[in-house]
Picture 1 (cartoon, rainbow, N blue to C red):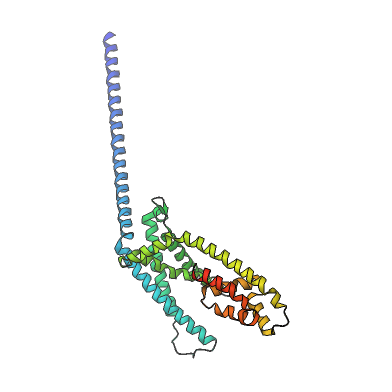
Picture 2: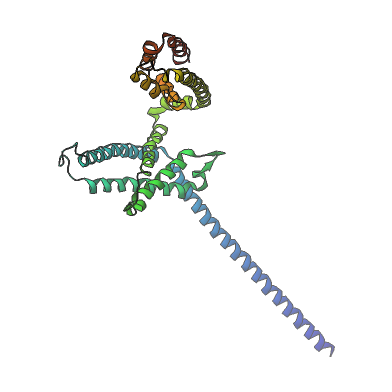
Length: 305
């Protein structure tokens, strides 16, 4: 019995040892599989990261930006020719241009427009893929040029490929001014080419002085408003003066009869350089004393400010 008991105990120990060996081998296999899976994922991540880094280097490189800048210049030239053709068609429709002077180029113009739009769409998609969030925001600052490009491309797509099919029965004239945004894309060229480096410095200087310019315009606007109100108040009595000729009173009302008319007149005489045309009638036909406020305003505001 003792011999049988020892044999059974030995068999149990052997079975336990075999089970432990199997468990250990299984654990080693799982660890190796986990390491292999992690290595594969790491390899794919490194490969994907390398592709994104290479793609971003491409879309932010000088060659890519230079090529897009050249396309932008060609697009501006095309917009000029397109507007020239559109103006000719408008002239024919109102009878000031002879029909047949230019061939029918509607299909050609549409095809070239789609070509340029396609290029800018591809550029936008590539930058969104490779730059991702950095396209919109990077290094603590908003990427304004990129946002502007995206807005222009989306508006162009909306105008050419969506609204074009909805124009029947709709007044689209309110949307046409949005097309001028395409012309502003030329500003990207100033940022791209080194030949415009000094011009960029000048633009940066003007931008830095914008707030000073803004407050200068506020001050000038206040002075112009005060002078306009003074002139409107001064000519009020002359409008009812029957001793003045009807043409003179009509002229006074046209230029100074109301505050809004007077403000517009002062704006014109301040910035147009044609101030004698707004003063001579007052001085010669109403009263020579009107020369005093004009001398003070022209000397102190138009000349000095």
